[in-house]
Image 1 (cartoon, rainbow, N blue to C red):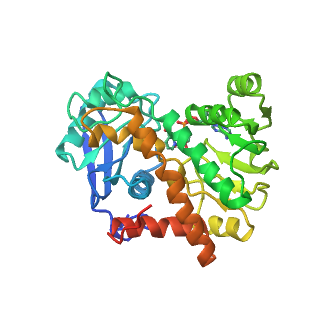
Image 2 (image 1 turned 30 degrees about the vertical axis):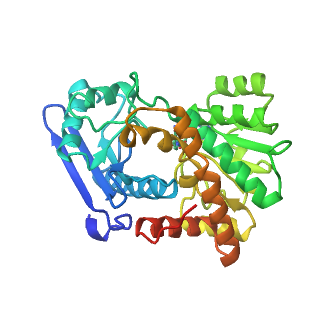
Image 3 (image 1 turned 45 degrees about the horizontal axis):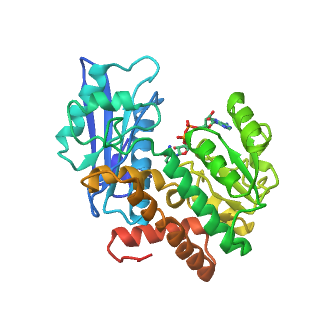
Length: 351
Ligand code: NAI
């Protein structure tokens, strides 16, 4: 692979490979940008098909973190680490301690944390070797980011509903939630309290049953949720759900969810725009968890109230994105990318 020419390379500042023979660690840390502050981004452990796939994931995710921090008005940059290996069979305390030593070599240019395939316990091991770990489960740390991510997505939906329908709240709107995990369930609870009518799907039947029982949600099969007729579709499970197969079958008027990289390619965002479906850029909508965890890097002591105040950046930023997209007849995904780039380059767009 020619790294500098890779499609996802996007001017990354630094991409480091780490190897520890004793524990079997093979890790890549990608730092996309430290222009606004130290790079932050979790550590993903995944059994990639090959090294190229692991690098591509690290590159794509670290750039996304730069955009997310910038749009959330955080003085932080973007980075991401991936550990190449099966999280089911390859984990050990030694592996995460070796990973912690790798993070330590970057001397605070990069802060890591939990992500897909890693747990707070894994990060506690890494933290024995480095202090550049966020989201540890201990007194004074920021705890589970998911409720704050859900708060931010609900606020993003309100901003989108106001822009699209002139609705001042979500009461009576039909909202389809794909995935009732940590974020999706917390989001569904918030939407229920706001008077929305829920339609839900998850591969885990127990989670669906809970939403049906406690939130009066209507269950649908996982193969139907994306094409269900609704006002807002909230992808809260997997990335790339808006793709060649699905983009023309969506029957919603807004897409706003927590999943990272919901558009398989930018062209799918263009297609949503053509179809008159308002896409809420994921890295703006789902920044609540990052806003919360960022306090561990930026503040002397954790204060949930500070996170709640900062969350208002999400609807303010979206209002700018929607207005600029309308004025230029461009898809919101392209406008948000450009705006994030401008913020990082110092042509700051205050919100
Ligand atoms: P999670 O793993 O707790 O929940 C995912 C849920 O989706 C699970 O309940 C799973 O059973 C379900 N699911 C998987 N495949 C499905 C399918 N085909 N159809 C329907 N449901 C399916 O993950 P979490 O933390 O709730 O995150 C959800 C999404 O939001 C992920 O894409 C994550 O990257 C993103 N995100 C999460 C943040 C957080 O604070 N946890 C922050 C920013 C983004």
